[in-house]
Image (cartoon, rainbow, N blue to C red; front, side, top):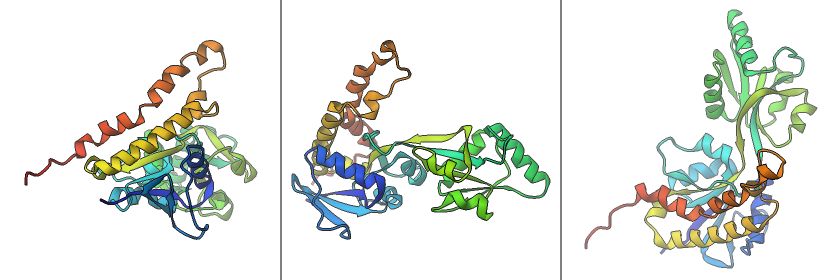
Length: 283
């Protein structure tokens, strides 16, 4: 009977948010030091914690190298296999809120929308060039561009420091994740009015086939989810509970319904992994 393998971000905002969430839930992670890539949770002796780069976690879940993990929703959608075995277990863990956006240089005064960007791409094409867009989110951005009829673009893969791309000259436009937009503004970049590719937050994902066929691991996940749901439900600052379409009392009224839906994350998990359940072989 093998332990549940939980992959967590090894650094950055999601590492900090995950550490705080687990501590708040009474599931403090015990890690010998910051350079060690394994840890445990004393309250759950059947769980092994693996610290990994966030960009690798979805791939590891799909391959079965880890059973469950915490990533940004943007990373999950960018990296998962189209017909893979990774599924969403919990859709909002209450931290890591951000947006994947399209940003252009401030000097492009007449470019404020995706339609304007489509026109610019046509202008570049008429001059024998493609508009270059720097991003590490090739898959999500290309799909968004296609949906907005922005053609004749060349995607430039960059893993970091995208804000410098227009200045250095290897791309005219960037698509990057941002929480506040401050870094973009400080580098003379502006988000297009309708240039939000997607909103993102921290989520829990898992390997559906493994979970559907290992009741011991499924029981561990149930206990973890119950603690997480209870903690987030009790928190006045939780994003799902606090998000409303407006600020009036009438608009805030539906919040209890959202909380009741939110508490059923384990039930939704069971439904998601059913197709991956393998028949028990008769001995």
